[in-house]
Image 1 (cartoon, rainbow, N blue to C red):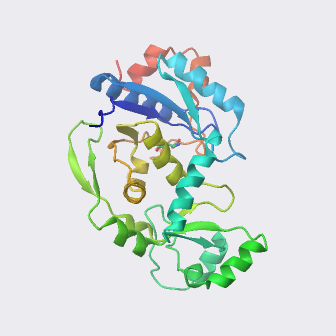
Image 2: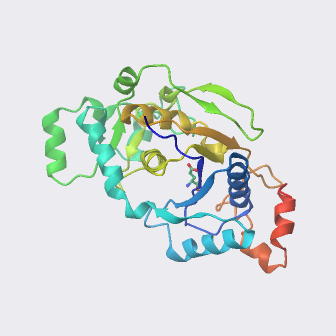
Amino acid sequence: MTTPHPPTLRFAPSPNGYLHLGHAYSALQNERVAHKLGGQLLVRIENIDLDRCRRDFEAAIFEDLAWLGIAWQEPVRRQSEHFSDYACALEDLTDRGLLYPCFCSRTDVARKVDGARDWPRDPDGAPLYPGTCKQMSADERAQRLAAGQHAALRINMDEALSVAGMLLGWREYGEEDEARDVTAEPALWGDAVIGRRDIPTSYHIAVVVDDHLQGITDVVRGQDLFNATSLHRLLQALLGLEAPNYRHHKLLRDKGGEKLSKSTRAKAIRSLRNEGVSALELRRRLGFA
Ligand code: GLU
């Protein structure tokens, strides 16, 4: 008999900027649910993008979380130290014919679908992959790879759905702790990139592998990742991994209605701190007394 995992959550920021109020909200939601479930909270540093992530931002994350009064369980998992785990999963899926190399750039894809009326788009707004490299002969693939051409790995969605079975879903608790069953719709993503061309993994495969290896039972994260969960459920099914429960929380928005992000120059937690805002006051402002 396998012992069930104790409730385990993770806050998983990317160290490509300072944490802002949206991150504080997400970290506090994680803390709230961990407390409610009597579980532990882990921190995972999602730094697969080595060009954009920085060690000083990482140090600032720990400093800001500690200032907010959030306690987490060590050790912290840093994704950049685990590329081989993601490579294993990618190799497994490739060997089973579920991923194929794709040599197209974003511009190639845009050019291909340009002019096609109402070309379908994925939930993030990117055009679905038109399948150019899917038809490539094994010889041409081998030649291009041998010549050192970089390829992304795309999921063969039709094949993956037939292997995983059509009926996938997850238990969603939202922010209100009300359970409902959601049907996953991975097909909305088409032949999505699962291994990037520029780095030997992708957010999707790394998150699924790590949630499994860290024994995560409850994923608490922003609503912006709700649709990606369909893809995560598909990858979990293909890799034989258990599905955690999900709790997607609301996103904080600025006055113009834009979601807070590094690119909208959302105010960093440390700026508020420098202005004299206390951690308690910040918690209160965000609705966590
Ligand atoms: N690293 C992601 C972010 O900073 C969060 C990923 C997740 O929680 O699954 O938005």
